[in-house]
Image (cartoon, rainbow, N blue to C red; front, side, top):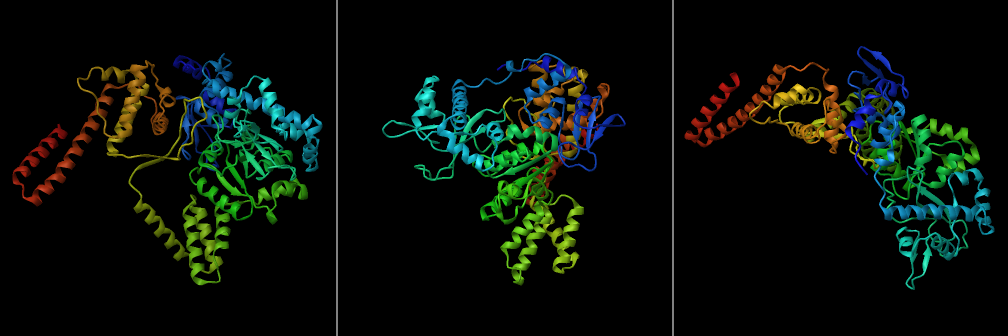
Length: 613
């Protein structure tokens, strides 16, 4: 894989107007020099999404997302950087050979992919086109699964005799070592190759590109030998990591992009049943509990995420855990769908119909309401002590609500339900908030926005980027200085006249300055250096640059402005030194070190004089 030349990136970016591109996804309204709308990435009743036509960047002042046209397409389409460049080239009607820049698949990985593709075809044929598959096929048809659904999900059947598949794949040119690496086969002590899914209905597990990368086998015949677990999944392999992938993501994604909603289920058959019923935006985890990686993917594409887990104790705990993880991704709204009588989606839809299931979606519980009901079942509310504990638990839940108005409404609900004075509840909320505040370190804290240059699917990142700021005054001057370096050639020319290097105070500013020097001097990029935001790999730095691009209006280079800015930073260096000396002065006075005391006083006086002149 070769890196996309900066000239190509700039040519493609300059060939489109970001306003025209974004307008194809949302309706922008011109406000002053910018364009605004409700943010497409989260529920946004007060439009906080802004697009600058002058700078060709966007920014949401609520969720923190921002960047160039490439970043917008990455977020809205859920694609990687190279795919975003390709999409932009399509808007501009420019040629772009994406294969040139895609990361090549390792040969061993490609072999495993090929084995899965051939095995999927074999399993599907064996189920739908052979006499041996008739019993399993009738089992599915009797469960009211249509042939169209079976074809859509490429369901299959693994023969009871492992040699049937083994010989087929050998004829296709694969050896036993490769078949073992695929995870489809294992080897017995007597070196016999065994299909681990033999005698099971097969559900192919696909990656976001729609390629089979693993399988899940389901029991359908209780008389079949060695059938223990109801479902049996592929082991972890070079191409299959169940903690990151979601079942049916490839087929559900178009509907998600249309509705901005997703249904998260526990099982594959739930997803298949929902899809057949017209709910095409359903996904499921692949034999594991919901992870941050999963919610990171889903929250990028959806405004509303619905959890549909079993109503038993394990399902309730899974739902609670899902709501806990969701607090790390506040850009989306999360709800739980409660199916009465602990029925699964398939059985409910068969018995009550799709309209009834849609009503369950409409009646879904918010995170607060679900957790309130869950905790209620864990306390004996007839016992005053436990009742008090339950109410304290609800007050803790109120703290997780972002909206002050919703917090007030919840306080009123608790007050009315348990006949408690609102002022007591408010006092408790305020006390807990203060405890959280006092226990938190002092940081410059902003929501993060990651920008990926890598071709592979981005890893999840936390939704909080924390910058420790040594000097807030210096930070403002440093950002202004860095902004000039991004947009003004004259700023770089001025730096070339200096006898000593420029030093910055805050760590994030130092990292940004070093990245800009490398981008400008070593890599030879031209002004404006807006491409820096997708060049750096550090996630905090990516977000910092995206923030910085929006921070100031464009202006002509003024040498006096950069001189004053660097002088302000230098003064802050001196102020920090004076502060340290003042603290040392106090210690010298207490220890009666009069010689050192006089030295410190003279040094502080010298530094104060330096500031004034």
